[in-house]
Image: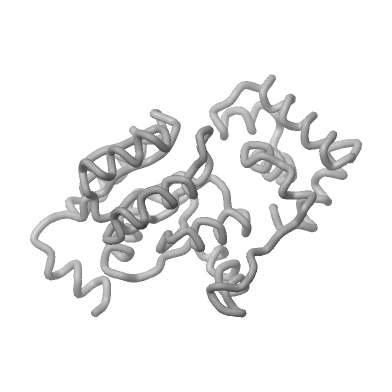
Length: 227
């Protein structure tokens, strides 16, 4: 059965639970999905892992829109704590990150798809309906990461990089945007953090990678397909 056929047999909208640590972003997603028609309905939301686990258990949504990076563990931790308890719930990652390791980690954790936050409201509603109907959904350039990672089978070893692994998720986000040419102020705006915090993360990344400047960091990030 295709996702479209499944949607045609529905008697109501797909029930969605939204997980993201930024309240402003959650409000924006709610508004975008509301404008996209009556195919989906946001029935609850959470800003932390603990809130997400409790909320998913209470509301029993069909689809969870899941942020990858949050201060208390992120999407992988939510998946770990919910998947066995509520195997019927479908997870669709919705993240600012388009890094291969983030995509692979949440898919291995049990998410059915992964889209980036540049997606439009109508496209997001389409993605929610498709994963609810059983289809995997990925932003265009991300599907290749998954195919590469699972080409040796679903239990093959995950991609690892000792140098990259020493960076925190937030440091990777800052590095990725820095390597794309974003100014510190633009990075701060994109990640909802202060310029001072951006500077702190950049200093930490330079120290951990033993590099000297943003140009070397850009090459380092490009070599690891972070850009």
